[in-house]
Length: 159
Image (cartoon, rainbow, N blue to C red; front, side, top):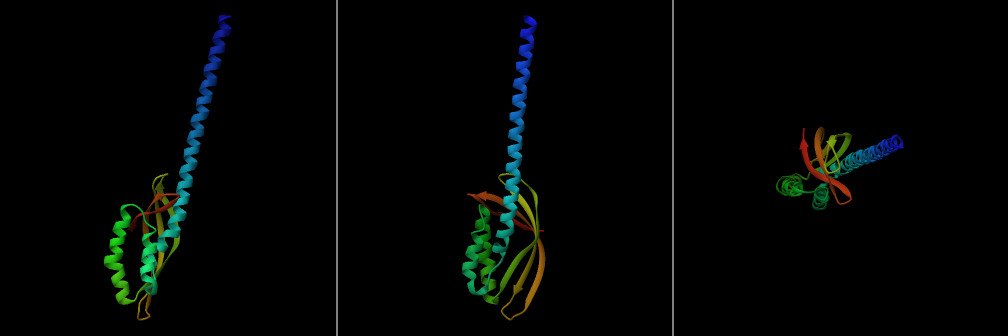
């Protein structure tokens, strides 16, 4: 009888270990899925928000710059607001400049559920008040952070 009791105990321990292993695997899979979802959501938000951040029309400059600032979060909001007020707005108004940015390619560099870094390749078309235009390409590294139910721009670094 003691041999049977010993086997029963071993079987019970093995069963408990199997259940624990299954729970740990399930939690790991859930975390991996949540990280993948965060990266995907942040990438989609960056593709949408960065062109809104960098595009404006001279005729609707104030509204466009307010919309641009609404794409940001955290300390970047104050920093970018200062850049808009001190550089972009006076220059765009004085020279009657309009600019349009579009994303030509994008990918996730790194990140998780609380912060994702995205690399964007941009094409920016600028038109001046005299009718001349220029097209340029650039790369930017964008830090995205969750803000409520969405992702917003928490940093932007030209490369």
